[in-house]
Image (tube, rainbow, N blue to C red; front, side):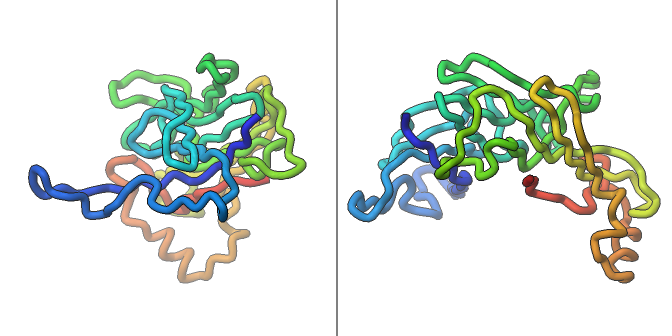
Length: 238
């Protein structure tokens, strides 16, 4: 089985001033490839602006594509032995968060999914269940998130740590509604086994008195997201 290496996707945004103008970043694609000096393999990409998970070879050619994923908020895609892929799907604009974490087999069939965390209101007014996951998640049996010696993650669902949002008010943090960070661990059958909310532990984070005062003095929540994103965590790890 081919070994997959996870690489954080890099999105190059080219600004085109007029028709026919060249990109501001050039060239693009695979620019240097020396087979004699490289460990040959595949790279898993979760690119922004592409509703899919891609696998590319060393020449930059797409050799596998799973459609139906939304990587704008959910963080990395990860590939398991046997050609399984796990990544985020769905979005709740303008909140930077996904609706579900979904595992698909090599053919694209859904074999596991989780989104039953909290209920949220969508832009069209409908109330749905959502995982509210953002930026990162990790499988307990796959701590690196990519191929590494001795790591043999199961193809079936394992315990997962997810970084999510929660909306509430905590006067000890600020006197405005918060879009707080909440870590949850879920079991393979979708039960929340453990949770930790950042705002409940602000006193343990070592902020100075001046920093605490600055946080508490927030003028209000982000107008688009209806909550003060006071900490903005980007990673979750066992």
